[in-house]
Length: 430
Image (tube, rainbow, N blue to C red; front, side, top):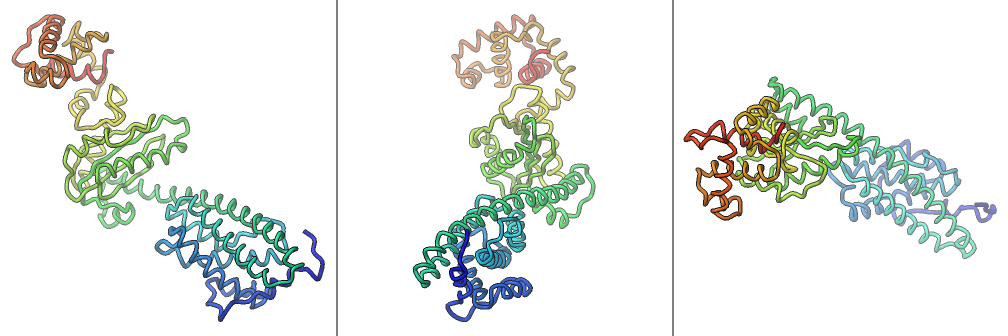
């Protein structure tokens, strides 16, 4: 935008703080470079405005003032104001150079602290709105012709600078978050791999690296996604792990990306949770199709951490082979996990024991399930009827028909039959 010599932004060089300027937050080198171009008055004004701006942003977006974040953030705001003043004075072409290195450093810290990107960019928008307001207020003291010329110019340039800064910071944020996650994940994965392999790991080292206390009661989760690109599902996997942990009332949660669309997670408690707390998870947590989860048994300490993960792995295997819900609980399939380590052999066994009762039509499945529940309830038709939500006579009839298909009467010892029925329920026919 062209300007005459008389209307050049000399008013910017007349800016000055309202009182003694606060101590700059930026490095002496940054402040000296700004003073050389702008002079002490505008630099003092910028430091004063930046102090107010940073406080205003933190008031509306508290994450910018989180633990250890405020001093770097204040430097970032101050450097941004100084660069904006220099840009308004000389009107350089918008470029990455318009983004202060201090702003990039603060942005990287926010990424490492896992502050959401939308909160980071909201801070950028609030800051530029604050600066725009203060510049227009300063222009109000200038003659009418200067105000008319400069108001539009300032608004237009600040919009461009804000857009450049938001784009650059978003790019840097994503890159830093990915770098930090890879580094953190790699360190966590090494510790977790050692623990799962039974190798000795110091408790203090593990706690510092994992941010998680192994001297607790643990329940492991394995959460998987069939997404073609596993990176697309990474955040969804973590979100489901967090929801499961909250619903179980856990003290802390550890997650480790295992690769291939799989997330390992552990929830922990100072004392073992009640069994019904975990049994209710499929009803208390919303299914996130097509994600699947497997839950290991609760166990204590470093060995418990390892055993629970092994249980979750077995539950995940049974879920892949059989017919379970979106969350497969090891406590409900532990017998099946033991029996189906060799699925093909297990199906042969079930087919041999069940004979015609192993058929895969709807009617035979109904008879098979009724017989399974009947035996599990101690051969009580009434208890089986209540569990299956059918009439007592219906249970009696179905059990009779199932026995007819078996071709042999029910013996006192029905261990093989019960095992075969359990295998058929989870694995289905060959």
